[in-house]
Length: 331
Ligand code: ADP
Ligand code: AIR
Ligand code: ASP
Image (cartoon, rainbow, N blue to C red; front, side, top):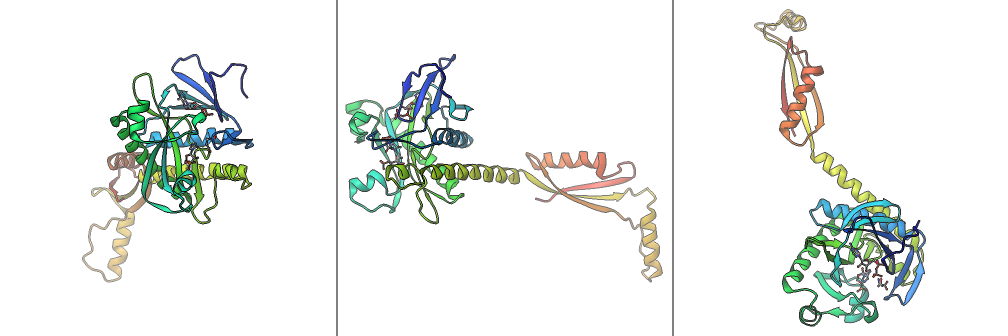
């Protein structure tokens, strides 16, 4: 629930509040939806909490890949704590498949897979309808970023696009395009900011091309809430697939051979040796009967897996007084 505290900024979809820490802000994700620079307004029931959670999961994904973001933590269903930044007033858009304003501008059909991803910049200014900018406009007219910053943003955005494309394809989603915002924190670091949600991404189901994002609201396609719920499900699925893959990566297969020590009486070995002799196998000597134990163990490295196995042998898998053991990490 929104508190009595007054927001320092009320945007089209979020309210921004100060916290006791001047460097940390609280963002409250509302259900309100706008399109075409607020010309169309409405509500998507449940969107606030879904977008807060999807943003959380995707910011965490970014951090996992070493991308610096403003995200601190989710503190309630609708609220995140974020690092305060000075937003660079650019909408950084990356496109993989033609849609939206690209189609309108160029008169091409929706759904064309672009020869390579396109990064473009729009001026973040609702009153002007977020116009598309050239580099010269940004550097020499607006003076909001120089070549070095724009190169850095472009490189980072393409890296982020690669991560998202792979992450979402893994759960049957095509990333058509999306919009990012970057900001500068108090120490001068450039951080990925704002939100990561179906409000600023176009997501299509990879099999059916069904739209699962704000285009359902923009184009009155119906089942808007369902699309957001579906995307939350897919993001969660993607995260758990990643966790499983990580666990598997850090799992080692171990084979332990346990044998009676050379100088220890092995009644079972002796019995087998005797039986073999009576069957006519002459010259069988020093026969020992042992056992093999195989298992998988989670560890950071092969040597850690070996050490764990050794401890397990000493404590349970072998009797070190009368048995020798040999540990092999096989995969
Ligand atoms: P809009 O301003 O486009 O209507 P929102 O309703 O999402 O968008 O409002 C959130 C506002 O907060 C945006 O203007 C966004 O640029 C800004 N913002 C996002 N993250 C931060 C941050 N970490 N620090 C400061 N401002 C931020
Ligand atoms: N976007 C742009 N401005 C606001 C938003 N959310 C996002 C759209 C779409 C991408 O940027 O959601 O994913 C490109 O939008 P468009 O309208 O330029 O085609
Ligand atoms: N975010 C912009 C708006 O709310 C543009 C859009 O999403 O269509 O109007």
